[in-house]
Length: 261
Image (tube, rainbow, N blue to C red; front, side, top):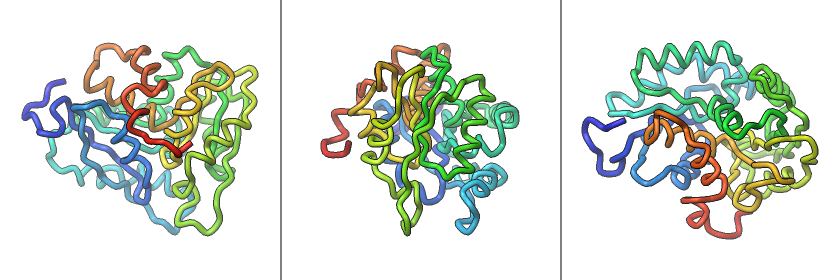
């Protein structure tokens, strides 16, 4: 997909990155994960901080047009909805309908975090999942229902303890908490592990554990970055080789630094 007007810092594509309002993880991880030549403009999803996490997920989708308007007329090559939980709130059928309508209207790929994870799992041939969840109980349950509606079997869920009194329980987590939860997950009978949520830092965890018990470990943000790169650079056929390379840290692990996992 060729840019009509090449941009200095986005010569291979410009991503419209749609980010939850207080999320402090998406943009730093995108900066590490996206290949050279891909840039982004960020727009903040619109939600009321006084609502529950589950209620905000629904609100983000209801206000999506207002979020998209923040990007104005930037020459976007693809949009990426960098939140997994919003898909749980609307469900797979409505998510697919919404994506189809947006792509027809915007005339560029509209990529969601949840569908990116689905695409990655399908390419990896993974059907039986282990989930590492930083969500409260109701959102974790909605997550399990979503993945099962997509044809996966959720074998096991490891919960990440949430800090009390933080500005946001998920965004205040570190990759250390994700790593401990992953290490405590029994890998027996699973094909892949998914570190859920774009707000929980995960790159330190994946750098340390690209596989767990012999099966690949992916996260919502890693899947988004892979799917965006494929849409902008190789739209004809998403590459499992590129996915495995990203899981293995190619292009980002050396920039991550030490002491995070």
